[in-house]
Length: 213
Image (cartoon, rainbow, N blue to C red; front, side, top):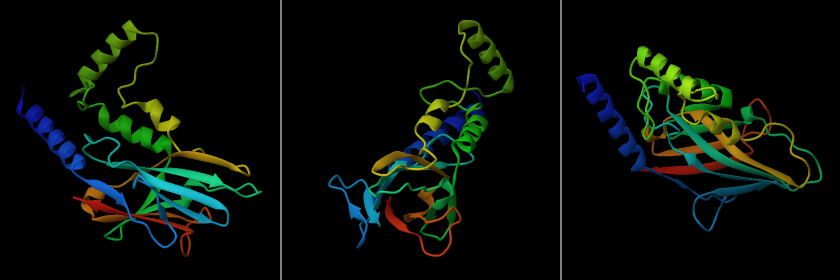
């Protein structure tokens, strides 16, 4: 095992341990109610209830470049009208005032595909060099009729994402919203949901979280 490989594995281990030692705890407010389990917040405005909780602090804890954080949202339309809450209406802000726009599942897939192909994600085997990637792809193609991807569960990026489009009266949707953000650099975060596709003025919903280290 060469020095680069040992350095890479050490960095992966340290990153994983650091992420595991953190807790993202929801903070109730006058309007955001904490659930009995203490894991999520629910806020209701004009008959539309949104529940938010952390999904993953680091979607890929072994990444070296872009850290992906995800939050799970449940949108419950209790009204008699259709509503739409576009992905662009959801923002994340950390304790230092850094603002992060939500990104599409396609963008997440692009990041995951770019970064994981050269690494060794536990418990999967990745590639250090392009030659290894090509050889591995060839062997896999011979063994299976399915397309081979070196990404980390690429299908889950889309199946877990918050569905787009209108929400019918008395219906609800649930799914994950992704951000290119590293909450380990801050002591708190706030998930914001605005009324329109272009975030302006005061957010309609606020979900504060403490990052406990």
